[in-house]
Length: 502
Image 1 (cartoon, rainbow, N blue to C red):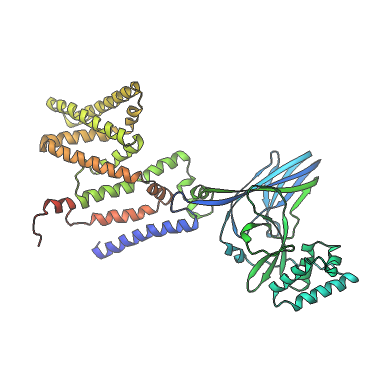
Image 2 (cartoon, rainbow, N blue to C red):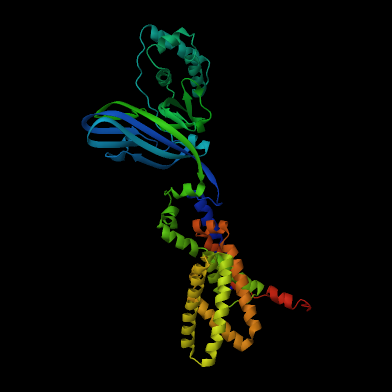
Protein backbone atom coordinates (compact mmCIF):
# COMPACT_ATOMS: atom_id res chain seq x y z
CA UNK A 1 0.00 0.00 0.00
CA UNK A 2 1.60 3.25 -1.09
CA UNK A 3 1.78 6.23 1.22
CA UNK A 4 -1.09 8.15 -0.42
CA UNK A 5 -3.56 5.28 -0.20
CA UNK A 6 -2.40 4.59 3.35
CA UNK A 7 -3.00 8.21 4.38
CA UNK A 8 -6.48 8.18 2.84
CA UNK A 9 -7.27 4.92 4.62
CA UNK A 10 -6.08 6.32 7.94
CA UNK A 11 -8.09 9.52 7.44
CA UNK A 12 -11.27 7.59 6.56
CA UNK A 13 -10.84 5.30 9.55
CA UNK A 14 -10.34 8.24 11.88
CA UNK A 15 -13.29 10.19 10.48
CA UNK A 16 -15.49 7.07 10.56
CA UNK A 17 -14.85 6.61 14.28
CA UNK A 18 -15.70 10.24 15.04
CA UNK A 19 -18.74 10.25 12.73
CA UNK A 20 -20.25 7.07 14.22
CA UNK A 21 -19.74 8.52 17.68
CA UNK A 22 -21.60 11.71 16.76
CA UNK A 23 -24.37 9.74 15.04
CA UNK A 24 -24.85 7.57 18.12
CA UNK A 25 -24.97 10.72 20.22
CA UNK A 26 -27.63 12.16 17.92
CA UNK A 27 -29.80 9.09 17.35
CA UNK A 28 -29.46 7.09 20.55
CA UNK A 29 -29.23 10.23 22.72
CA UNK A 30 -26.09 8.87 24.34
CA UNK A 31 -24.45 11.81 26.11
CA UNK A 32 -20.90 12.66 25.08
CA UNK A 33 -20.04 13.98 28.50
CA UNK A 34 -20.55 12.12 31.72
CA UNK A 35 -22.56 13.88 34.35
CA UNK A 36 -25.09 15.36 31.93
CA UNK A 37 -28.56 15.47 33.39
CA UNK A 38 -32.02 15.51 31.91
CA UNK A 39 -35.39 16.52 33.30
CA UNK A 40 -37.91 13.70 33.22
CA UNK A 41 -41.60 13.79 34.09
CA UNK A 42 -42.99 10.77 35.90
CA UNK A 43 -46.76 10.68 35.38
CA UNK A 44 -48.97 8.13 37.09
CA UNK A 45 -52.63 7.56 36.26
CA UNK A 46 -54.73 5.88 38.92
CA UNK A 47 -57.98 4.30 37.73
CA UNK A 48 -60.60 3.46 40.32
CA UNK A 49 -63.88 1.70 39.72
CA UNK A 50 -66.29 -0.69 41.39
CA UNK A 51 -66.41 -4.08 39.66
CA UNK A 52 -69.82 -5.71 39.27
CA UNK A 53 -68.84 -9.36 39.79
CA UNK A 54 -68.55 -10.03 36.06
CA UNK A 55 -65.85 -9.96 33.37
CA UNK A 56 -64.01 -6.65 33.36
CA UNK A 57 -62.62 -4.83 30.33
CA UNK A 58 -60.99 -1.44 30.93
CA UNK A 59 -59.77 0.69 28.02
CA UNK A 60 -57.77 3.80 28.73
CA UNK A 61 -56.26 6.30 26.28
CA UNK A 62 -52.51 6.66 26.80
CA UNK A 63 -49.97 8.98 25.16
CA UNK A 64 -48.59 7.83 21.83
CA UNK A 65 -46.42 10.65 20.53
CA UNK A 66 -47.27 13.59 22.78
CA UNK A 67 -46.04 16.83 21.21
CA UNK A 68 -43.14 18.39 23.07
CA UNK A 69 -42.25 15.14 24.84
CA UNK A 70 -40.50 11.88 24.12
CA UNK A 71 -41.91 8.76 25.68
CA UNK A 72 -39.11 6.99 27.57
CA UNK A 73 -40.78 4.21 29.47
CA UNK A 74 -44.26 3.06 30.34
CA UNK A 75 -45.53 0.33 32.61
CA UNK A 76 -48.67 -0.90 34.28
CA UNK A 77 -49.31 -2.15 37.78
CA UNK A 78 -52.42 -4.27 37.88
CA UNK A 79 -52.08 -7.57 39.80
CA UNK A 80 -54.46 -10.23 38.55
CA UNK A 81 -55.30 -8.37 35.34
CA UNK A 82 -54.22 -9.11 31.82
CA UNK A 83 -52.63 -6.08 30.17
CA UNK A 84 -52.16 -5.16 26.52
CA UNK A 85 -51.91 -2.19 24.23
CA UNK A 86 -54.47 -1.85 21.45
CA UNK A 87 -54.48 0.69 18.64
CA UNK A 88 -58.02 1.24 17.35
CA UNK A 89 -58.21 4.02 14.72
CA UNK A 90 -54.47 4.69 15.10
CA UNK A 91 -55.00 5.62 18.74
CA UNK A 92 -53.09 3.97 21.55
CA UNK A 93 -55.13 2.49 24.37
CA UNK A 94 -54.10 0.48 27.42
CA UNK A 95 -56.41 -2.47 27.99
CA UNK A 96 -56.87 -4.36 31.26
CA UNK A 97 -58.96 -7.52 31.30
CA UNK A 98 -60.05 -9.95 33.98
CA UNK A 99 -62.41 -12.91 33.94
CA UNK A 100 -64.21 -11.87 37.08
CA UNK A 101 -63.84 -9.05 39.58
CA UNK A 102 -65.93 -7.69 42.39
CA UNK A 103 -65.74 -4.63 44.59
CA UNK A 104 -63.34 -1.70 44.52
CA UNK A 105 -60.61 -2.04 41.91
CA UNK A 106 -57.52 0.11 41.35
CA UNK A 107 -55.29 0.08 38.28
CA UNK A 108 -52.13 2.06 37.69
CA UNK A 109 -50.43 3.23 34.52
CA UNK A 110 -47.08 5.00 34.73
CA UNK A 111 -45.13 6.76 32.05
CA UNK A 112 -41.80 8.57 31.90
CA UNK A 113 -41.54 11.48 29.50
CA UNK A 114 -38.57 13.56 28.46
CA UNK A 115 -39.23 17.15 27.35
CA UNK A 116 -38.04 17.79 23.82
CA UNK A 117 -37.87 20.81 21.60
CA UNK A 118 -40.95 23.00 21.70
CA UNK A 119 -40.88 23.12 17.91
CA UNK A 120 -41.78 19.46 17.79
CA UNK A 121 -45.33 20.46 18.63
CA UNK A 122 -45.66 22.11 15.27
CA UNK A 123 -44.07 19.17 13.52
CA UNK A 124 -46.87 16.83 14.47
CA UNK A 125 -48.29 15.40 11.25
CA UNK A 126 -51.50 17.02 10.25
CA UNK A 127 -54.40 14.81 11.23
CA UNK A 128 -57.81 15.16 9.81
CA UNK A 129 -59.74 17.30 12.25
CA UNK A 130 -62.49 15.71 14.17
CA UNK A 131 -65.63 17.38 12.91
CA UNK A 132 -68.50 16.51 15.08
CA UNK A 133 -71.94 17.02 13.67
CA UNK A 134 -73.33 20.30 14.80
CA UNK A 135 -75.84 20.33 17.52
CA UNK A 136 -78.50 22.46 15.90
CA UNK A 137 -79.30 25.64 17.70
CA UNK A 138 -82.92 26.43 17.77
CA UNK A 139 -85.00 29.43 18.59
CA UNK A 140 -83.32 32.05 20.72
CA UNK A 141 -80.07 30.03 20.91
CA UNK A 142 -79.76 30.09 17.10
CA UNK A 143 -80.14 33.89 17.14
CA UNK A 144 -77.56 34.23 19.91
CA UNK A 145 -75.09 31.92 18.14
CA UNK A 146 -75.48 33.78 14.85
CA UNK A 147 -74.81 37.09 16.61
CA UNK A 148 -71.62 35.76 18.19
CA UNK A 149 -70.40 34.25 14.91
CA UNK A 150 -70.95 37.51 13.03
CA UNK A 151 -69.14 39.54 15.69
CA UNK A 152 -66.16 37.17 15.82
CA UNK A 153 -65.93 36.95 12.02
CA UNK A 154 -65.93 40.70 11.56
CA UNK A 155 -63.11 41.18 14.08
CA UNK A 156 -60.84 38.43 12.69
CA UNK A 157 -58.73 37.78 9.62
CA UNK A 158 -57.75 34.11 9.82
CA UNK A 159 -58.30 30.93 11.79
CA UNK A 160 -56.12 31.99 14.70
CA UNK A 161 -57.58 35.45 15.18
CA UNK A 162 -61.09 34.01 14.76
CA UNK A 163 -60.43 31.49 17.54
CA UNK A 164 -59.04 34.23 19.75
CA UNK A 165 -62.18 36.30 19.26
CA UNK A 166 -64.45 33.37 20.00
CA UNK A 167 -62.57 32.58 23.22
CA UNK A 168 -62.75 36.22 24.21
CA UNK A 169 -66.51 36.32 23.64
CA UNK A 170 -67.04 33.04 25.49
CA UNK A 171 -65.42 34.53 28.58
CA UNK A 172 -67.54 37.71 28.66
CA UNK A 173 -69.62 37.10 31.71
CA UNK A 174 -72.09 39.90 30.96
CA UNK A 175 -72.74 38.76 27.40
CA UNK A 176 -76.33 37.56 27.42
CA UNK A 177 -75.94 35.57 24.20
CA UNK A 178 -73.03 33.64 25.69
CA UNK A 179 -74.85 33.01 28.96
CA UNK A 180 -77.79 31.67 27.02
CA UNK A 181 -75.64 29.21 25.06
CA UNK A 182 -73.62 28.16 28.13
CA UNK A 183 -76.82 27.25 29.91
CA UNK A 184 -76.97 24.07 27.85
CA UNK A 185 -73.37 23.47 26.86
CA UNK A 186 -69.84 23.70 28.28
CA UNK A 187 -67.32 26.24 27.04
CA UNK A 188 -65.00 23.75 25.32
CA UNK A 189 -67.86 22.02 23.52
CA UNK A 190 -69.33 25.36 22.52
CA UNK A 191 -66.00 26.61 21.17
CA UNK A 192 -65.62 23.47 19.08
CA UNK A 193 -69.15 23.86 17.76
CA UNK A 194 -68.39 27.40 16.62
CA UNK A 195 -65.10 26.40 14.99
CA UNK A 196 -66.65 23.45 13.22
CA UNK A 197 -69.53 25.59 12.00
CA UNK A 198 -67.00 28.10 10.62
CA UNK A 199 -65.00 25.30 8.89
CA UNK A 200 -61.92 25.83 11.03
CA UNK A 201 -59.95 22.54 11.33
CA UNK A 202 -59.92 21.55 14.97
CA UNK A 203 -59.86 18.60 17.29
CA UNK A 204 -60.62 17.97 20.92
CA UNK A 205 -57.71 16.87 23.12
CA UNK A 206 -57.22 16.13 26.76
CA UNK A 207 -54.13 17.06 28.68
CA UNK A 208 -52.50 17.92 31.96
CA UNK A 209 -50.93 21.12 33.20
CA UNK A 210 -47.56 19.88 34.42
CA UNK A 211 -46.57 21.00 37.88
CA UNK A 212 -44.07 19.21 40.07
CA UNK A 213 -45.37 17.06 42.95
CA UNK A 214 -49.06 17.54 42.11
CA UNK A 215 -51.61 14.84 42.97
CA UNK A 216 -55.23 14.07 42.18
CA UNK A 217 -55.12 15.99 38.91
CA UNK A 218 -57.73 15.51 36.22
CA UNK A 219 -57.47 15.77 32.48
CA UNK A 220 -58.35 19.18 31.06
CA UNK A 221 -60.09 19.58 27.70
CA UNK A 222 -58.24 21.55 25.03
CA UNK A 223 -59.02 22.56 21.48
CA UNK A 224 -56.29 22.25 18.87
CA UNK A 225 -56.79 24.59 15.94
CA UNK A 226 -54.92 24.10 12.67
CA UNK A 227 -53.58 27.09 10.77
CA UNK A 228 -51.79 26.74 7.44
CA UNK A 229 -49.31 29.37 8.57
CA UNK A 230 -48.65 28.22 12.12
CA UNK A 231 -49.71 24.57 12.19
CA UNK A 232 -51.51 23.23 15.21
CA UNK A 233 -52.14 25.73 17.99
CA UNK A 234 -53.35 24.81 21.44
CA UNK A 235 -56.29 26.58 23.04
CA UNK A 236 -58.11 26.48 26.30
CA UNK A 237 -61.70 27.63 26.18
CA UNK A 238 -61.11 29.46 29.44
CA UNK A 239 -57.68 31.00 29.04
CA UNK A 240 -57.28 31.17 25.27
CA UNK A 241 -54.10 30.47 23.35
CA UNK A 242 -51.49 28.49 25.30
CA UNK A 243 -48.09 29.72 24.20
CA UNK A 244 -45.95 27.75 26.63
CA UNK A 245 -46.81 24.25 25.50
CA UNK A 246 -43.94 22.85 27.57
CA UNK A 247 -46.24 23.10 30.59
CA UNK A 248 -48.97 21.00 28.96
CA UNK A 249 -48.89 17.27 28.33
CA UNK A 250 -51.47 16.28 25.72
CA UNK A 251 -52.48 12.90 27.05
CA UNK A 252 -55.09 12.10 24.41
CA UNK A 253 -55.40 13.80 21.02
CA UNK A 254 -58.69 12.44 19.90
CA UNK A 255 -62.28 12.81 20.93
CA UNK A 256 -62.72 9.18 21.95
CA UNK A 257 -63.74 8.46 25.49
CA UNK A 258 -60.56 8.57 27.56
CA UNK A 259 -61.66 5.87 30.00
CA UNK A 260 -64.09 3.09 29.16
CA UNK A 261 -64.93 0.49 31.82
CA UNK A 262 -67.02 -2.58 31.01
CA UNK A 263 -68.04 -4.66 34.00
CA UNK A 264 -67.76 -1.84 36.50
CA UNK A 265 -69.15 1.52 37.48
CA UNK A 266 -68.24 4.70 39.35
CA UNK A 267 -65.00 4.84 37.38
CA UNK A 268 -62.59 7.73 37.72
CA UNK A 269 -59.01 8.51 36.78
CA UNK A 270 -56.65 10.80 38.65
CA UNK A 271 -53.10 11.76 37.87
CA UNK A 272 -50.02 12.35 39.97
CA UNK A 273 -46.90 13.91 38.54
CA UNK A 274 -43.30 14.28 39.58
CA UNK A 275 -40.42 16.04 37.92
CA UNK A 276 -37.01 14.52 38.41
CA UNK A 277 -33.54 15.32 37.15
CA UNK A 278 -31.77 12.09 36.25
CA UNK A 279 -28.32 11.42 34.81
CA UNK A 280 -28.55 11.45 31.04
CA UNK A 281 -26.64 8.18 30.79
CA UNK A 282 -29.15 6.52 33.11
CA UNK A 283 -31.92 7.81 30.94
CA UNK A 284 -30.18 6.53 27.85
CA UNK A 285 -30.02 3.03 29.32
CA UNK A 286 -33.81 2.89 29.35
CA UNK A 287 -34.06 3.68 25.65
CA UNK A 288 -33.99 0.83 23.19
CA UNK A 289 -35.30 2.53 20.12
CA UNK A 290 -32.37 2.64 17.77
CA UNK A 291 -30.12 0.32 15.80
CA UNK A 292 -27.21 1.48 17.93
CA UNK A 293 -28.94 0.29 21.07
CA UNK A 294 -29.79 -3.01 19.42
CA UNK A 295 -26.08 -3.73 18.98
CA UNK A 296 -24.97 -2.01 22.16
CA UNK A 297 -22.97 -3.74 24.87
CA UNK A 298 -25.56 -2.28 27.26
CA UNK A 299 -27.85 -5.14 26.25
CA UNK A 300 -25.44 -7.69 27.70
CA UNK A 301 -25.69 -8.99 31.27
CA UNK A 302 -24.05 -6.72 33.82
CA UNK A 303 -21.15 -9.11 34.39
CA UNK A 304 -20.27 -9.15 30.68
CA UNK A 305 -20.69 -5.37 30.53
CA UNK A 306 -18.06 -4.97 33.25
CA UNK A 307 -15.69 -7.19 31.28
CA UNK A 308 -16.25 -5.22 28.08
CA UNK A 309 -15.83 -1.94 29.94
CA UNK A 310 -12.31 -3.02 30.85
CA UNK A 311 -11.55 -4.48 27.42
CA UNK A 312 -12.65 -1.34 25.61
CA UNK A 313 -10.04 0.63 27.57
CA UNK A 314 -7.20 -1.48 26.17
CA UNK A 315 -6.94 0.38 22.82
CA UNK A 316 -6.34 3.64 24.68
CA UNK A 317 -3.69 1.93 26.80
CA UNK A 318 -2.09 0.50 23.67
CA UNK A 319 -2.02 3.99 22.12
CA UNK A 320 -0.10 5.28 25.16
CA UNK A 321 2.44 2.45 24.87
CA UNK A 322 2.90 3.03 21.13
CA UNK A 323 3.36 6.76 21.67
CA UNK A 324 5.86 6.29 24.50
CA UNK A 325 7.91 3.72 22.58
CA UNK A 326 7.85 5.22 19.07
CA UNK A 327 7.71 8.96 19.70
CA UNK A 328 9.35 9.26 23.12
CA UNK A 329 11.63 6.26 22.71
CA UNK A 330 11.18 4.84 26.22
CA UNK A 331 12.29 1.24 26.60
CA UNK A 332 9.98 -1.21 28.31
CA UNK A 333 10.24 -4.82 29.37
CA UNK A 334 8.01 -6.54 26.87
CA UNK A 335 5.93 -4.68 24.32
CA UNK A 336 2.59 -4.46 26.08
CA UNK A 337 3.62 -5.49 29.56
CA UNK A 338 2.88 -1.92 30.79
CA UNK A 339 -0.78 -2.28 29.71
CA UNK A 340 -1.13 -5.48 31.72
CA UNK A 341 0.53 -3.86 34.72
CA UNK A 342 -1.82 -0.88 34.39
CA UNK A 343 -4.81 -3.24 34.32
CA UNK A 344 -3.52 -4.82 37.53
CA UNK A 345 -3.11 -1.35 39.07
CA UNK A 346 -6.77 -0.63 38.26
CA UNK A 347 -7.76 -3.76 40.18
CA UNK A 348 -5.46 -3.21 43.14
CA UNK A 349 -5.37 0.63 43.18
CA UNK A 350 -2.17 2.31 42.17
CA UNK A 351 0.15 2.49 45.18
CA UNK A 352 -0.56 -0.99 46.65
CA UNK A 353 -0.29 -2.45 43.16
CA UNK A 354 3.02 -0.70 42.50
CA UNK A 355 4.50 -1.90 45.80
CA UNK A 356 3.27 -5.45 45.22
CA UNK A 357 4.57 -5.59 41.66
CA UNK A 358 8.02 -4.28 42.56
CA UNK A 359 8.22 -6.64 45.55
CA UNK A 360 7.29 -9.69 43.51
CA UNK A 361 9.74 -8.87 40.72
CA UNK A 362 12.63 -8.17 43.12
CA UNK A 363 12.06 -11.39 45.08
CA UNK A 364 11.65 -13.29 41.83
CA UNK A 365 14.93 -11.92 40.42
CA UNK A 366 16.81 -12.97 43.55
CA UNK A 367 15.44 -16.52 43.34
CA UNK A 368 16.01 -16.59 39.60
CA UNK A 369 19.69 -15.78 40.12
CA UNK A 370 19.94 -18.92 42.23
CA UNK A 371 18.23 -21.02 39.54
CA UNK A 372 20.68 -19.78 36.92
CA UNK A 373 23.46 -21.64 38.74
CA UNK A 374 21.64 -24.97 38.30
CA UNK A 375 22.00 -24.95 34.48
CA UNK A 376 18.33 -25.85 33.92
CA UNK A 377 16.58 -25.94 30.56
CA UNK A 378 14.48 -22.85 29.83
CA UNK A 379 11.11 -24.65 30.10
CA UNK A 380 11.95 -26.06 33.51
CA UNK A 381 13.38 -22.75 34.65
CA UNK A 382 10.30 -20.74 33.66
CA UNK A 383 8.00 -23.35 35.17
CA UNK A 384 9.93 -23.10 38.41
CA UNK A 385 9.65 -19.32 38.31
CA UNK A 386 5.89 -19.53 37.80
CA UNK A 387 5.58 -21.72 40.89
CA UNK A 388 7.84 -19.36 42.82
CA UNK A 389 5.71 -16.37 41.78
CA UNK A 390 2.60 -18.20 42.99
CA UNK A 391 4.30 -18.82 46.34
CA UNK A 392 5.35 -15.17 46.55
CA UNK A 393 1.82 -13.97 45.84
CA UNK A 394 0.43 -16.43 48.36
CA UNK A 395 2.94 -15.30 50.96
CA UNK A 396 2.09 -11.62 50.40
CA UNK A 397 -1.61 -12.42 50.64
CA UNK A 398 -1.18 -14.26 53.96
CA UNK A 399 1.07 -11.55 55.41
CA UNK A 400 -1.38 -8.85 54.30
CA UNK A 401 -4.29 -10.76 55.81
CA UNK A 402 -2.60 -11.15 59.20
CA UNK A 403 -1.60 -7.49 59.21
CA UNK A 404 -5.19 -6.47 58.52
CA UNK A 405 -4.61 -5.31 54.96
CA UNK A 406 -6.34 -6.66 51.92
CA UNK A 407 -3.56 -5.46 49.66
CA UNK A 408 -1.96 -8.87 49.62
CA UNK A 409 -5.17 -10.46 48.48
CA UNK A 410 -5.50 -8.17 45.49
CA UNK A 411 -2.08 -8.99 44.06
CA UNK A 412 -3.62 -12.16 42.69
CA UNK A 413 -5.01 -9.96 39.91
CA UNK A 414 -1.52 -9.74 38.49
CA UNK A 415 -1.11 -12.11 35.55
CA UNK A 416 1.18 -14.73 36.99
CA UNK A 417 2.52 -15.99 33.68
CA UNK A 418 3.39 -12.47 32.56
CA UNK A 419 5.19 -11.73 35.81
CA UNK A 420 7.11 -14.98 35.58
CA UNK A 421 8.10 -14.24 32.02
CA UNK A 422 9.09 -10.69 32.95
CA UNK A 423 11.35 -12.03 35.70
CA UNK A 424 12.92 -14.41 33.23
CA UNK A 425 13.49 -11.66 30.64
CA UNK A 426 14.95 -9.28 33.19
CA UNK A 427 17.19 -11.99 34.53
CA UNK A 428 18.53 -12.75 31.05
CA UNK A 429 18.93 -9.03 30.42
CA UNK A 430 20.86 -8.73 33.66
CA UNK A 431 23.21 -11.49 32.61
CA UNK A 432 23.74 -10.13 29.08
CA UNK A 433 23.69 -6.34 29.50
CA UNK A 434 23.97 -5.74 33.21
CA UNK A 435 21.83 -4.38 36.01
CA UNK A 436 21.65 -0.86 34.51
CA UNK A 437 19.70 -2.05 31.48
CA UNK A 438 17.36 -3.94 33.78
CA UNK A 439 16.73 -0.76 35.73
CA UNK A 440 16.19 1.22 32.49
CA UNK A 441 13.69 -1.21 31.01
CA UNK A 442 12.03 -1.96 34.37
CA UNK A 443 11.78 1.72 35.17
CA UNK A 444 10.48 2.43 31.66
CA UNK A 445 7.82 -0.24 32.07
CA UNK A 446 6.69 1.26 35.35
CA UNK A 447 6.62 4.81 33.92
CA UNK A 448 4.58 3.72 30.89
CA UNK A 449 2.36 1.57 33.10
CA UNK A 450 1.76 4.56 35.35
CA UNK A 451 0.84 6.80 32.40
CA UNK A 452 -1.37 4.07 30.98
CA UNK A 453 -3.03 3.66 34.35
CA UNK A 454 -3.71 7.41 34.54
CA UNK A 455 -5.18 7.45 31.02
CA UNK A 456 -7.29 4.34 31.59
CA UNK A 457 -8.52 5.72 34.90
CA UNK A 458 -9.70 8.93 33.22
CA UNK A 459 -13.42 8.73 33.80
CA UNK A 460 -14.25 10.67 30.63
CA UNK A 461 -12.28 8.17 28.53
CA UNK A 462 -13.98 5.24 30.26
CA UNK A 463 -17.37 6.82 29.58
CA UNK A 464 -16.47 7.45 25.95
CA UNK A 465 -15.03 4.02 25.12
CA UNK A 466 -17.80 2.12 26.89
CA UNK A 467 -20.71 4.08 25.46
CA UNK A 468 -19.14 4.82 22.06
CA UNK A 469 -17.08 1.71 21.17
CA UNK A 470 -16.74 3.02 17.61
CA UNK A 471 -14.35 5.70 18.89
CA UNK A 472 -11.76 2.91 18.95
CA UNK A 473 -11.68 3.09 15.13
CA UNK A 474 -10.12 6.52 15.50
CA UNK A 475 -7.64 5.14 18.05
CA UNK A 476 -6.67 2.38 15.61
CA UNK A 477 -6.10 5.04 12.95
CA UNK A 478 -3.75 6.93 15.28
CA UNK A 479 -1.86 3.72 16.16
CA UNK A 480 -1.44 2.84 12.46
CA UNK A 481 -0.28 6.39 11.77
CA UNK A 482 2.33 6.16 14.53
CA UNK A 483 3.39 2.81 13.07
CA UNK A 484 4.64 4.61 9.94
CA UNK A 485 6.71 7.10 11.91
CA UNK A 486 10.39 6.83 11.03
CA UNK A 487 11.81 10.07 12.42
CA UNK A 488 13.84 10.76 15.51
CA UNK A 489 12.47 9.86 18.88
CA UNK A 490 12.39 12.49 21.61
CA UNK A 491 14.94 10.54 23.63
CA UNK A 492 17.26 10.50 20.60
CA UNK A 493 16.84 14.21 20.05
CA UNK A 494 17.79 14.78 23.69
CA UNK A 495 20.68 12.36 23.46
CA UNK A 496 22.10 14.04 20.35
CA UNK A 497 21.07 17.54 21.36
CA UNK A 498 24.64 18.85 20.95
CA UNK A 499 24.96 17.62 17.35
CA UNK A 500 24.39 19.87 14.38
CA UNK A 501 21.75 18.08 12.28
CA UNK A 502 22.26 20.48 9.40
